[in-house]
Image 1: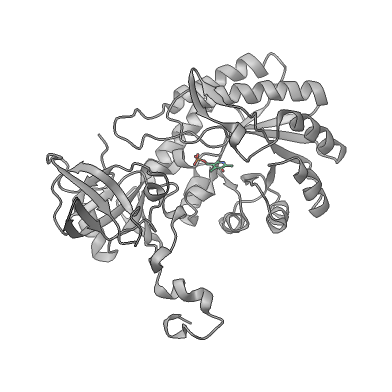
Image 2: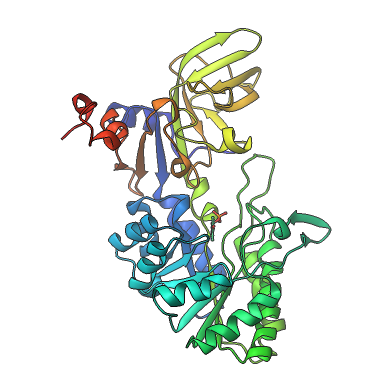
Length: 422
Ligand SMILES: *Cc1c(COP(=O)(O)O)cnc(C)c1O
């Protein structure tokens, strides 16, 4: 069963200061999970997690993860700027981008980040722009279908990312001519995998590729970046991943492929986002309306602007009605926000306890790709982010948007000055 990390009493206390809706993150859970990841990969000397900033781009979260030893994985100029301001620099930053604008590459280069090229043509592009750094990463796309045991997990052949196999070999040769000395290789083949075999399988593919690339080009391959994709069980029936089994699976592939090839000094990197944060965030929202037409609707004060995944992917997010954890789930509801879009539903035909106006709902697993995917459709504003500290205290780590924020981009024209704070 999924249990919230906050109690009804805690929430009642919090909303005296911070009204619903809000996102809240669990410092204790985040730290423990990060420590377990590092333990699971402690067999690898240079192991490092580069947290995927896009999942939860909040400076307080980034600094917390930095304290646990994490770097950051950025893919845009503003993510680089945010990371810079949080004190990340040089090899603390992985820049894994695609369709990359010039200013993004310039910033990554200026910060001394590890640059992970998405395409063969970017070699010339970057060379003209900044020159080729001595350490450089290449993103690999093996094409076809990616299968684990008999299950097709994803189809890299349809994905826009990465170099083909041939391009990896040619790319490394060209980069060596242009002065690159040390290489990393990277691949991301399936998203939100809830299985302990994804990373080991991906690792074996990249390890075998590293051996081949070294044989064919003589390149010094120093880093293998397994990227993101380790998932979490959004539905209560699924078993969470066992990060220790995953770490051991990668270890076994390392011992079987890299060690015999004399490549036993390669550092493993990860760029996890969802796995690091998703379970440690809740969207807390209040029931403000009921509606009885052809279906039963519960209207809440959060909208898809706060959490887009259900609207965008039909994603399941578990819901707990605080104080009714043990009540029978004998009512079928659609739980909706206020957007003029029928996909603004946090749940459809969900069996829940009877919900009264004023009840507080916890929407689970919103710590990654939650707030960050938010938008402002219908002029709806995004709400605050809070951090629940280990000692039980609560800190606001992003204030709620105001109309002034929403109108800010009209500050040149005078028309909205009445609502724009100076
Ligand atoms: C999105 C992304 C990640 C993180 O993915 P998760 O599914 O959140 O683990 C890591 N690396 C790159 C390049 C990405 O685009």
